[in-house]
Image (cartoon, rainbow, N blue to C red; front, side, top):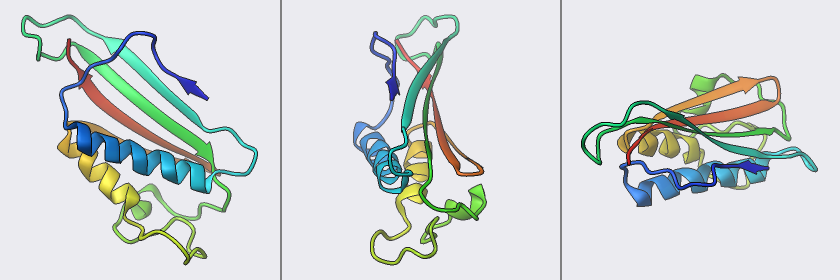
Length: 133
């Protein structure tokens, strides 16, 4: 279930790295969601005052991706962000455990904030970027 504004939202960033962030996050969400459950992707815009320059920030764009996991999430937010750590320790057939670490690193390189929340079986990733005109 995707909820995004009708109007385009602009941030000043590296498009290739940001593409990889969303690719990793959405791929993980599709792979590890509980069967027949929904995945939510929201883009929330908070507008502040405009600056005089077109590259001066004037608000925040917050992307939230959340799902219910198809396995017990018995790890902390910090643990899952470590390189080579997999959320489902029983899984050994695919993935390197680098996806979330790369997503966090690339988000920060692109000037954004990266946050993960684990609440029971709910897995939520929040990315926050300054918007530009």
